[in-house]
Length: 392
Image: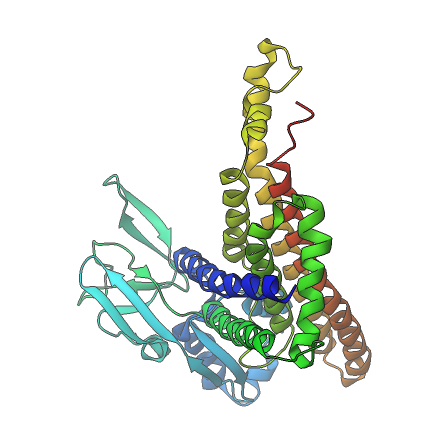
């Protein structure tokens, strides 16, 4: 038992690194459309409030939808708090850009604060005209994106730079990887100690979860003889999703980012499951797709496209389920907090906080539940790709 868990844990923390890498790449490729992610956007939105000062900052109508979406989206900086006079206290994050026009650039996001231009880059607003790959000119929205401009302030012809920045979501994924590696390495070391008769401490907490994934998820759905080689992946997915869900519920730095509520991250997780499922599919699996037993040949032109679409829809459902459930939970909690500011009354503080605490308790359950469901369905899809031959 112990030697098997050691091997599974070793492979798991290797997969954690790979998972972080591909999830980070997907976030880099994703459009950063968050105004909150733009230091320049912050300055412009609240400078007017500061200029009119007095009580102008407090008299602005509270827009719950905007505030909630700002908290859900990714950002180029980590916002800590906003003072009474409208100033933002934020931690800048590294900006890594590649421009066809000027090459690689690395600097902190604070360089772009207050609408500043740094090395020919600035935060975009509205839309710009750029040339696509076919040579045609098209209009593109650049709100919250970093754009490259010439000396006259016009976008360069090379188009938008490739943005590989360490955003808030990427930073929290990196933190999760560090935590998981530390925990897994400590767990592996604990099994090597001589004379350990029963699990203690962190080992005592994690071993039941590992055994649960093995005996209640992997073995029943994949098969007792085949599940072991998939355990590292299933453990990685389970613990990665779980820790990201739990960290997202902690409302202060360096936590609180909506990582598993980001469609790019859940897409990468679902893509891994799709690849494992189809790369390990046996002949019976592919025969059921291209020559379903008992189906007349004249129906195959209809059935084959349907089965091929099913290859994509299964991981697509995984992607949407995790994304939607986590995002919905964050929206509900933030909506309950917004009640205080909507009614502008301290009387609403107590009932609002009571409901928030209740929802947080449910969200803790959802954090475990979504990690379980994603891992369970991944194991189920992998198992379905390796059907037994006796029923053919």
